[in-house]
Every structure is written in structure tokens, then in C-alpha cells.
Amino acid sequence: MSSGFTAEQLQAHIPRLRRYARALTGSREAADDLTQDTLERAWIKRDLWREQAGSPDGKLRAWLFAVMHNVFINGVKRTRQFDSLDELAAARPEPALAGASAETDAALSDLQAALRRLPDEQREVLLLVGLEQLSYAEAAQALDVPIGTVMSRLSRARERLRQLLDEGGAGPQSLRRVK
Image (cartoon, rainbow, N blue to C red; front, side):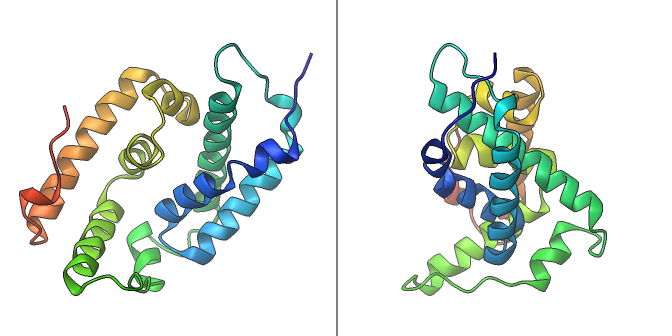
């Protein structure tokens, strides 16, 4: 017996999906396209989603992130016009945040550049756990990997991000160590 979800339930997740898409793509336009493609795919495949015990909302959120992850990976594989996501980010520079100080703007720019230099699998898990605050289990479900893989990718991503920020001039005080 399949149990779909309502349009209202789907709409409740749009802000988080957009934020994750923006972090993945580095571009507002590309993020909007990825979000739209994800919502379309999720709506078409809604009968595949089944509510499980626990928090149905959390399960739906993790499932939507899994759909977005798959749409993103398929899109990257389909469009080989850029050799890397670094080239994609360089082709579409993002404007500075309105009202941000030059120092804050530089720090955000350094962070964005460092995130772009992480391998896709590390960046994805870092964004899901750090930005979207998914549990390790939810991130594992979204990425279709074991929890141990999420933990090791997250650890490597955090360490690599520290190294990249140190190289880019941002001091170690920019990130706090999380154990």
C-alpha cells in the first residue's frame, strides 16, 4: 500500500531544498532549476515514498534530499560542458551579500571557494549534516550510503575544509573544531 504526500507537505520543504541546491550549485539560477526538477520528480514519484515509523516529516525531508542528490548527479553526468564544478562556479560568480562588510564578504567568498574544492561526496555530506542539519541516519538515507560512510566523509570533509581555508588566508579561528 503506497502512501504519497500532499502538495502542502512538499511545499513546506521548498526553502530547505533551495538552500541545499544553492550550496550544491553555487548559483541562484541553477539552484532554482535543480529545485524545480527535484519537486517535479518527487511529485511524479510520490507514490514511491512511504511513511515509516518515527517522524514522517523527517523521512520525507530525507527522501526529498535523496531525490535532489540523484537529480543533481544525473545533471552533472549529462552536462559535461564544464570539466568541474569549480569551472561552473567561476562561470557564474555570485554577488556579495547585501549589507555584508568587506571582511565578511571575503570570508564567505573563501568559504564558498573552499566548499567548491571539496570532492562532491564530501561536500554533499557536509552540507546535509552541517547546513541542513540532517541526522547521520537521514544523510545516509539521502545519499544511499551506510552511516559509517557518512561519518567518515564528514570527518574528511571538515578536515579538508580547514586545510583549504588555512591555505586561502582564513585562519583556524574561522572554523570551530567539532568532535
